Image (cartoon, rainbow, N blue to C red; front, side, top):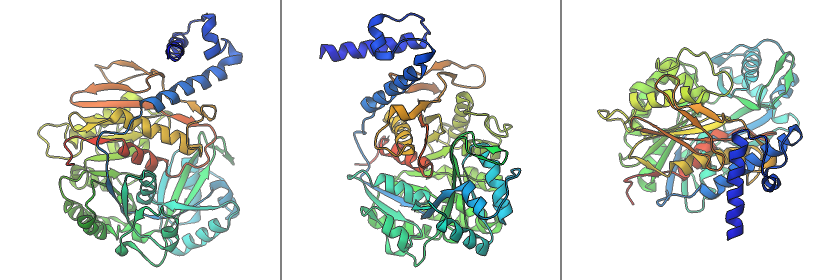
Length: 494
């Protein structure tokens, strides 16, 4: 016992020396952090990541009251994962300059949009309008050497992650075809009204960090998703989903797929969104609803979700850096003038936008009747959970659990391997981009930084970024699902 405590104390002291840049370390500490100098920098860094990983494992605990039944809907499909550059070359497309397109109408639009996001290392998702051209590209993708088929769609992916916990019963509702049904975890319940004769396919064009095509070089690994998906695009199974909740009696509802309606055109999405809100409003008020957002480009559509329709009636949302900034741009929120993030998103700016969401559209405003009390933000280098005080518990464990699964799943392993990951989160940062603001820092031995602004508490933890990720698709869904597993809603019925 004494020896373990001594080792822990030495490690903590070593980390303190490391952070304060002490040029001379006590000899007895060198066995734990290695000798100083350029030759050992990689070894010291790897051991820093080990300190964080070990801290996660010791600090992450399940909440006292866990979810027993979780209902998830409503987008589901089969993902065809393939090398983006390889597929475009097979389609006889030449590299060139990038250009974003809200909707893809041709393979040239696909090329330009893919390059646009590849050169930024950013994830994106687009609707492909031409059904026949999409089918032709989909056949080429399925036949491309090394192409793989996976469970796809935010709802199905979150269901798969939730189903890894044997004490959670999961209901999945979405357009589930025979291939997808075969691939789902046997523990997942699919209502009969959700089954259909054919599968919906999404094409996932992946690229690696440093991969080059023409003059374009990817700064980090990521993926570009596109589809011609009418069933998910119309959220055709939403009413079936809501109707199934009365029998299933969930403790938590997880909703995704709203972004798919954007590609249907304004006239269709305006009407369908009203119907969706009416259906969601039928869910019993004491059942919390988590909304998982995804890439969108239509500011009017985002505003309809944010201000008028969906966001006020959900308890929690999950989103990444692109979705966070676009949400602020659409609603003229903080830092809306930023065209894009420059590298790792500034923690202070992220904090400003998260606070604005909860004050403008959530319960942080004491006079508000909105249900929104929790936002789970994730980006490559770090995650932040922002919650209105008095509503959620165990959020330090929840944000760490989300970061841990991002590190392990990206590397394709059950646990975090410190030799395969790298710390990219800022070591010090501010809690806001404007005054008054506080200077905060990362402690590897206790890797959750906590701060408060008004009645909102923020929990931030770094991500140990996989150096050679095996698969980037579904990381956001796994992060949000894992964070929900470790979250506890205060005052929830037994």
